Image (cartoon, rainbow, N blue to C red; front, side, top):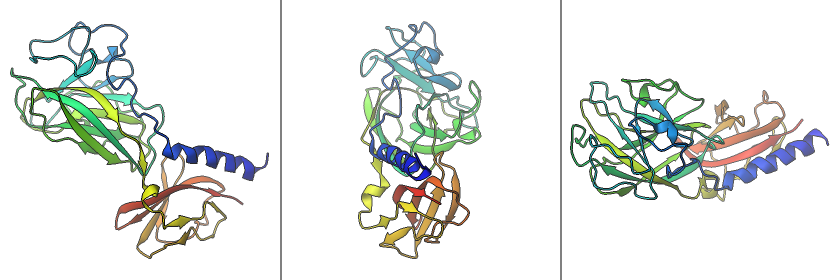
Amino acid sequence: MNLLSASLGLLLSVSLGLNCSAQVFTNADFEDFTDCPEFLGEVGKAEGWITVITNADYYNCGFTAEVFPSPTEASSGTGYMGMGTYGNLNGSAESIGQVLSEPLVVGTTYSFTVDVKDVTGGSFGQDCTGLCIYGFVGQPTEGLAFIHTQDLEGAVELACSDQVSSSEWTTVPLSFTADQAYDFIVLTPGVSPQCYHYFFIDNIQQEDLVNVQETSAELKINTSLRRGDQLIISAWTPNFNIGWYDLSGRLIRQGTLNKVPAELTSGVYFVQVSESGVPVHSQRVLIVD
């Protein structure tokens, strides 16, 4: 098999992946566990989940905690999580995370709904923040304390919900477009200094993936190129900014030049076209010698 045919096969396989509905999270309903939780802080008993900032709590098998009062248990099934803020000056908060089976695809919009509910009282009964998602390329340090996820190296805030304030299960939306190939995702209360707020989460549901290339039918990109070839073959405007990424999501080159950069070697790349800072098209392309 020659380089061209091998590369075309790779291009086909990765391009098909753009429109798949692969689930980002595993055990998104917190139902699967290695052992029933018996104490607070046992996030690791929920399969696939780890503690990032200590110490969120896993609830299942009827386990509850009087210090975090609530009249109901899970919104779906029997497993759910609880997490809170520290109440200190820098807005520290507990967080949980997951290593993704596949990195997020740059330029793809990910939309989720999550069930949330507030405690009904107690020392952590203040209402001051919502649920946030952070992305990382590479796994962050685990088990730190007295810090917020946003202060970890490489942390990127992807989305935050409105403030959680109801003690009944409520569904909140979270949506973002991946600007990097994140392979580790963290869930945490948002930053809220000097506030003690604890809430529960359950039933993370993912909607169908949407890639930005679906919104730009008129713009056409040449998908098999040689160095110096024109990239966009129709609907080009001088306002376009073109980002060239390798398959790990690393940005290699960015600019307004509508040609394949001379320094790129043969292989498969990801191209994202933006206008006024907004992605309008994304596609994988093949560069051949």
